[in-house]
Image 1 (cartoon, one colour):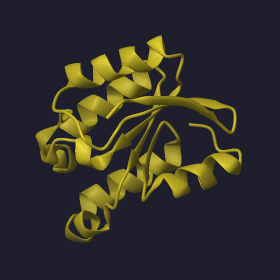
Image 2: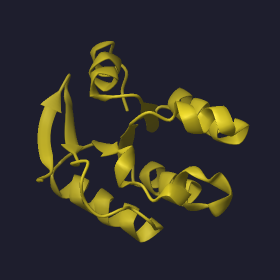
Image 3: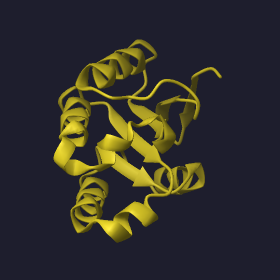
Image 4: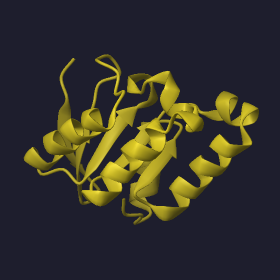
Length: 125
């Protein structure tokens, strides 16, 4: 599948397909940020299925490393997929997701409809 680039509620978005290589490292995040910048996108839609499972194990440090890259390079990311089963098992993950959603550079959303809703209310990533 091919990456899509489109405008939604005034934001240019790079939307990754659900199938493809897993993002495993900070360098993978850098490459994705470079792709977004080249496309003129300020927001990346990243299906949760594209993240290495260790990303959601906070002690691995992968989430912190990747999130910091997106924040540093001022490219927002919406991680789309159901995290509720994992959140119910990990208070630290639940807190991380809540704090990420509150700050606005990184969002964890259930689906693309939730992203459309969030952007339609004027939220900026």
